Image 1 (cartoon, one colour):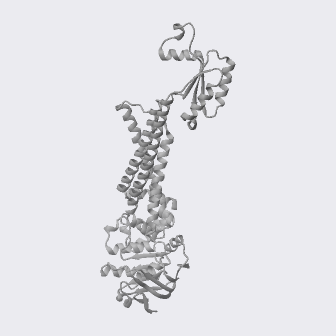
Image 2: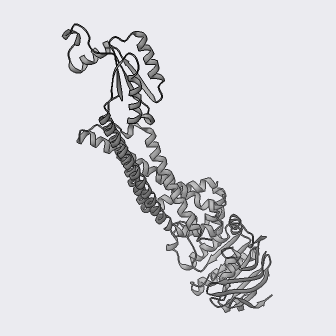
Image 3: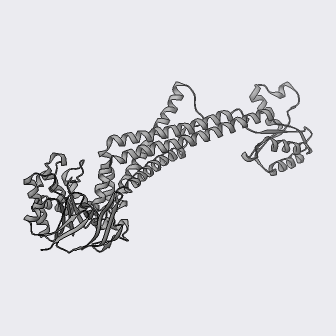
Length: 220
Length: 290
């Protein structure tokens, strides 16, 4: 599903990722663990083709980073859900419109959109918030909205970039619980975190990154 | 369904950024108002200057003794001469009627015989309307039998032609500069409007929107913006024409309302300026959004 083959990434300030070789299979849950600057976000960006390696190839859902066209990137992203630590919600739209956006971009009929959005909102406990705007919600609720938007079109892969970094303990635990629930329904998850406690608590594969290198790959 | 997304997003975009949208409409209105008034001012100036020029370029007077056959032959020669746009024959009777209309007296009641000669009034085509060409024409005409005199007010002709040429050149250069600056100003204003929507563009790209799907609603928004701006500028120009008529008591010979092609041109210019300006701004932004 995801394959990194001899991947090197250099920034102007120096090397970010060096000689990454790994594969993430379908239905896997993988933690990318490391301090900030270790290369976790760069790996996620390469998976959703926001960044490209200087050498080596990244293969995602059958698309090769070395020869992918811009319009194919859009297609790949329609099969990847993403959640970020700063939520990336559109502040001038209500919660319903935020969650519905990926479906509307795919040209799905309005009644189907409505039923899918309400279903996901129910699952994530934000049904009563659909007519509200992001600034009217708590950080935990906003992240649940971001999660609902990420999975509303049933993606093959869910990428989570420090999704609980700005949340209190209770909200963070809820979000992690939801992400695991999503995984159990058959979605592969790549979860970037600097929180070691998560790795200890949850039984999942964990790749530890130090200065752009995978120094440990804990397999289950 | 994607079409409904494009239309809905275009309209939502306008609603959500009402203020920048209104400012952009206003800037297009001002830009096209300047262009429209400029075109109108030039057309009217040329028209006013043109009024100093006679309805025809020169007049060939025929000898009183010229026979009907000679007149027919002369008419054929003049008509076939290269560069002749129009030729009107004025008989002795026509000349008398004109005299009567102009001076209010019947020439036949003053004199027993009609002394006014018959003539040909000649107008040249635009690209043959030069003093040198006309002088050569006069020389050729004077050699023909039956021609008495050819009257051509060369000085006045040259002066009017010179002034018209100057006005036309200055106006063309000025209008070109005005259009250029309005394009830059409007494009810059539209870029600022799009910059405020960075969050939306970045988010929809991350959610899997193709470049086309990102650009299309903005293109539509730009089109609506241009249409509104251009229509408003046309209405303001019409209002200005009415004000000139009723407050300055000057009836302009060239009015925009009489020229639907100019109205259509302004609206098309506004729509293309705005939609392409918006498209360019979005395209530029997409370079920074993966």
